[in-house]
Length: 127
Image (tube, rainbow, N blue to C red; front, side, top):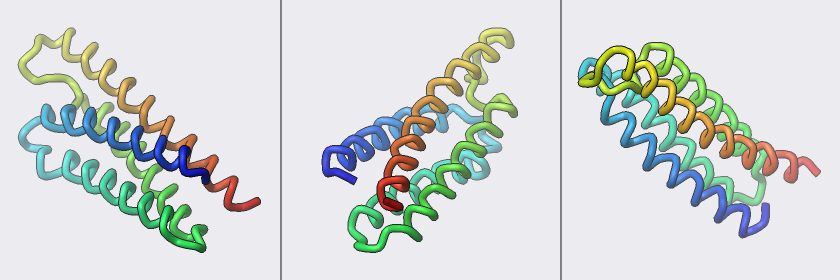
């Protein structure tokens, strides 16, 4: 992976984490130490794997682990959406559903972009 691609992945990941942390702070209080913490930890583990893959000579195992963590993050975020956790609890019901969907689409788009970069990285290592 080229240095500019690594910088792009790092930049996108940091921007995604900023947005994700804002959304996670609005989760219901009973989920702050549950699913919100799980999502946050999975994202931080992904970032650890990004750094590790950038530094390792043999990257295959690390990139596989990164890809697995990415899929876990996607599924955890989807679960949070299905449970309605991205909507702010102080808004009215119809607004909460729209906000939940809007936030989910915003964060899942960013997560998908990161996945595309990871997929390209894996493909370049295989060649």
